[in-house]
Amino acid sequence: MSSVASPIPGARFVDPKVLSRVGNLELLARHVVDGFINGLHRAPFFGASIDFAEHREYVAGDDIRRVDWRLYARTDRYYVKQYEADTNTNFTILFDISRSMSFSSGGVTKLEYGSYLAACLAYLSQRQRDRVGIMTFDEDLVTHVPPSAKHFNVVLHTLDRAKAERPGKLSGPLHKMAEHFKRRGILLLISDFYDEPAEILDAIKPLRLLGNDLIVFHVLDPREIDFDYDDASSFEDLESREQIPVVPDAFRKQYRALVQAHVDGLRQKFSEQRIDYALLNTTEPLDRALFSYLSSRERLLRVR
Image (cartoon, helix red, strand yellow):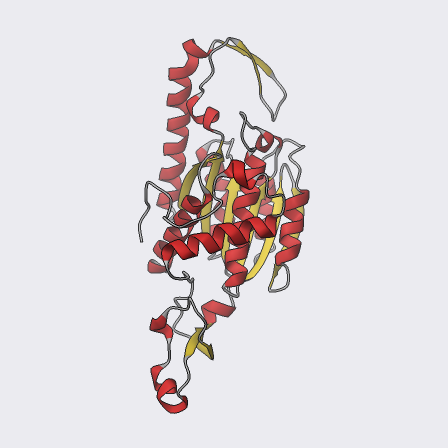
């Protein structure tokens, strides 16, 4: 599986502006994920373990390669093999809800887009019998829902109530989070990463050293990437509230170069640590984000 430049054909309700009118995270996640999977023509799965756990009856959408044909020959019924990786994976979302995540240039905010991503991936994970949990943070750890097979609705409730109100800092909260992960699992970090690449890598290193599979989604508004403004005015730093007078035409080229250098620095640092990184903007269809995630999972499983 490899990254693609366009959304998967067949996915439904993936435009973030459309999603913002749904108003129900569970319904939103179900529409996006089911549409995405229909577009793939099969349900993706995480399991790559060779530790057999149990059988279960075949249901439409299961990978036929997992059918136990010997058991079929004895029972005349279809069963698929369950593996430990199918039933024992902890999937935890680490969600940045710092004040800068409230930014929007006219569409959805970064916080809303991150919530859609988190809801979709939590739904996908619990559909595949993983235990799901979430931690939200700004300058400190805000909420902690430990991974559980029964916590999907709690995760959605946490996302629905999240507000981007305080300034943020990665280092302190992520070091605190590391204390909670005694068991290896999948961690998805969603943030706008307003820190230096070296500081960001230092902040997440304790999580990686515990043996977790770490996947990073870097969420930005299109105007944060392109700086597509025309009129001179004062721009406010949402974290510090500092007002900065800027003439966009004079600053745009330098700004874009700085953003690109930041993104390139993050991509290089994460690649060196075998951490998959995806830059997403808040107008990007969510099926593309899902495909990036599943591609990341496959690459990570290959290097385990």
